[in-house]
Amino acid sequence: MRDHALGGQTLPMIPIRRGEGVWLEDFNGKRYLDAVSSWWTNLFGHTNPKIGAAIKKQLDSLEHVMLAGFTHEPVIQLSEQLVNLAPSGLTRCFYADNGSSAIEVAAKMSFHYWHNQGKHQKRRFITLENSYHGETLGALALGNVELYKQIYQPLLMDVITAPSPDCFHRDSGETWEQYSHRMIEPMRKILEQHAAEACAVIIEPLVQCAGNMRMHHPIYLKLLRQACDEFGVHLIADEIAVGFGRTGTLFACEQAGISPDFMCLSKGLTGGYLPLSTVLTTESIYGAFYDEYISLRAFLHSHSYTGNPLACAAALATLNIFATEPVLARNRQLSEHLQHRTQALNDHPHVAEVRQHGMICAIELIRNKKTREQYDWQQRRGLRIYHHALQQGILLRPIGNVVYFMPPYVITEQEIDYLVDTATQGIELATCD
Image 1 (tube, helix red, strand yellow):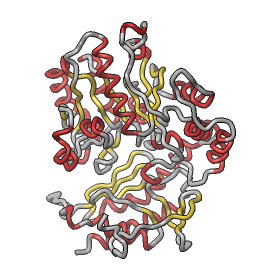
Image 2 (cartoon, rainbow, N blue to C red):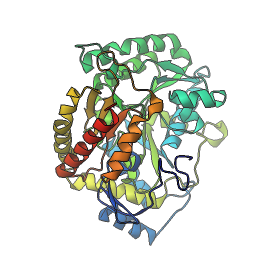
Image 3 (cartoon, rainbow, N blue to C red):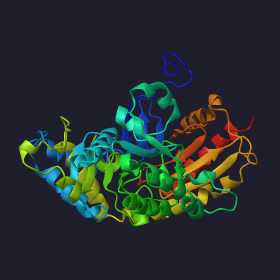
Image 4 (cartoon, helix red, strand yellow):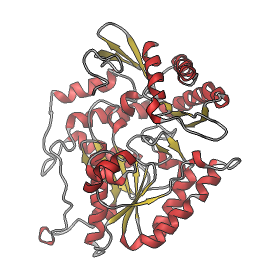
């Protein structure tokens, strides 16, 4: 907050007056291209008329009713559509308010499932290095952000951490697929050792977004699904950031041809309009809680705004855009253009790697390309790029020394050109000393 302090020059707050498409506008009339989709939520642009109209229409009939003993049309329609779109076998939806809450739901439901099966020793979770799943205590424990773990460790449950399949660490000449194939072996060893006490493995499919946008090959997901089945452990897919077309398919899991036991969705679910999340799970897991009241097997979780009708209306409008417009086909064209425009940065002396899955592209800066010596995080090189981009009318928000693009799907090729050109200028300025 000191960076944002009144009169401070480092990071002055920017009051936004309005938004339209990929653009945000401040009270002085200056516009900013939203290159990060306002923290990865916005899919079809700000003030999208179709989503806005759906919310306004819903507002005239029902703003909210508790989803306990009551229900409503938007949540029923949304559940039916999500089940039809999701990987096969995911037939039940449990709603919450945000991404972290969805992770809490999935973790509790996995644990409670095994409890109801009489396997009370199953109470731990397996997570990946460099992972991030949110900032409530359960979600924080399931992630692997070192700074958070150092501070909040006394409050967190004990988890088992496996090496990440992050392909940035592959050997010279090794392909993404080869490295991802190799990295399933330490996970298999952990499962073999801890399966009796493990509830689930949790993974961000294809992209560890908050973890410097590090990526892996779909083969890892396929092999992980097989390993979880072999050792009797659930698989939780955290698609909160990567779902709804971000990686090139509607859901990232599709690229591996797998179905997880739990799939967590949020962010783009409502097109970036309102908080809403859902956990999709299987009929067998649902059945483990279905019994007479006296058995006390019911799942114990609730939120006041669960399945809010306004948020569900936004989500239905978002899904309708996918259904009626060639969104994924257009995204493939845009991602190809983005790949073409960023390819030259691979030759930059201070760029370690340019990597991409669909509409997520990341450029990792490095001090020494040969030795892979990293820049000191305290130098805040990414902040220099952020400042430069703001001056040029672009909202970039690097993660440490990683510049990334995750724009709304309504961006044009010309706007991508401007985005890449500006980022390239910022990289030059940030690495010139």
